[in-house]
Length: 339
Picture (cartoon, rainbow, N blue to C red):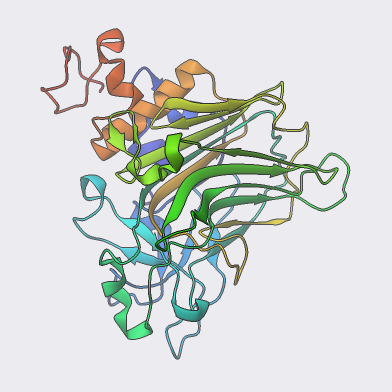
């Protein structure tokens, strides 16, 4: 049974996720959504596709798979106890000489997505280069690369078409700081407007500290994380880490849409692109609405409940909402179940 967001995780806090305007939802935690390259060996197999739990049927598909070698522009599917709350995930990784970098793509729905009325939520664990994740792929001579910019999600428009952006992109900005082979990793969102101008918003910390080691909402960024980006009606971009607003910039988004029929991407900026993400990706959602404060709280509680995540804004406001995780008696002020 395909459970997805409507049947499996509908009741969250005081609201329902499926009451909101869902435009796209690729949920890798639900194995029924995922088609893999080797049905006999689920964990570690390449992901051929992930169905869309939203209403528009935007199935994500791997760039390509070479059946003989098992190589392909695809992420690996991991079903193990290593995921947050033992959830399954897509492991996106860069391979040696980019022979088999991860990638997934889909065709944008006919329904327009306006940059001044949308919300993106991305749930993931950052993967450090060389911390053991590549042991799944030793036969492919893979390595994790932490020295190149990474794209987690790219929504595509068109070049030079009135009322349509060129692209929106969320990922990591990575650059050398000039000594010892040290690289700084920073969250970044970009939107390239129809007129060719590009708005960029990047996390910036004192003394050029990498975002890995900065604490947001109770944990360092390299721990289990989710990022939310909201495009508002006046063009403001609000950027949240674990539900807590980290950045905001006015005039960031134009009154323009993505292009229906264009191909958008996850884990990379295009098929065979050079911006492969190294991350454990649980799911990503795009809403064709700038979610309001209450609706963003609903997202917080959806993630808190599903992933048993006891950090972030949901728990920071525990005393106000008086709602707790189903089996978390230790939460401060917990007197009422969320179910």
